[in-house]
Image 1 (cartoon, rainbow, N blue to C red):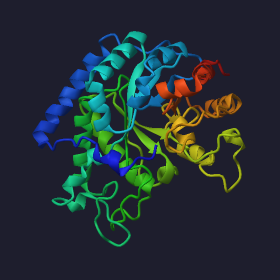
Image 2: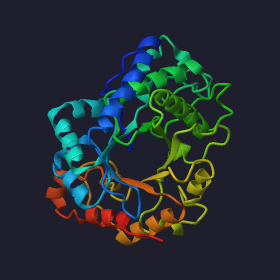
Image 3: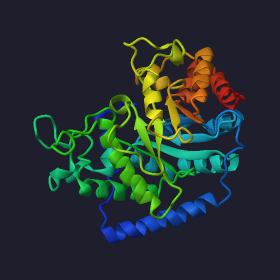
Length: 362
């Protein structure tokens, strides 16, 4: 979901830590994750359709206070929170966030965090002292405008350290971490990075984060977001163990099934998914869709429009993904909140969505 500079400024900047503190954090994350998982938190029984059956929401969407109950009734497995680490941390620590976590625990819903994280993984305030950690633009100038310089080992160490720190509070019950780069923004053009695609550069960062999280928690997984300028697969860098594909075709059409979008001019065509599945394991690959994303159809502005729900398109898309071996599916459902319910009342698309995901397929 596109973000404003004002929103970015509201992000809580992670504290810098020494390497010794970093190692203690790794151990703490591992121990707390084990306690957290072992405290009776379990997903609903696996449906014959898809293993992950999720929605991605922002905290404001939880003004629709019965979202967890609705998700449970629809046989969804997972609710993920979005968009920034600091914003979500602040909300999770508050009474509403704690109440949400307890609802999910009681209902057996998994909780994950899908985050635009780069500006907290590498705070822009570090640029004055360490500009070499940041990307170089096409004019040969270091800039703090977006992303980082992933060919610098110190960059990767700093980002991995911050990822572990964020994970101390935002602990996904699934062990899957979603720390994304800056939304559609350029990567580095320094002499070492310019021979790497933007997907390769993103994967360097994701590999480093996954390796740091796995040093103490071998089950941790980190998403590689194939989206916008990283939609095409990496060509030179291979995914580390535990790095899985998250494919998000934001520019595709939703008035016809995805498989019918074969015109060479179609944006985010299905061929990009097939290419990524030649690089990343199919069994862990996840599709991040926009079927229920009212914010997208509203051009990320309020008041929102009514969701143009096409159940036929959705079901055809599920068959397309299922045939490719994908068993993890989620969708943004941003702006499906109390105001949306008041304005349009009809939320039956949540049940349609859950039923489609749980449906048995050959």
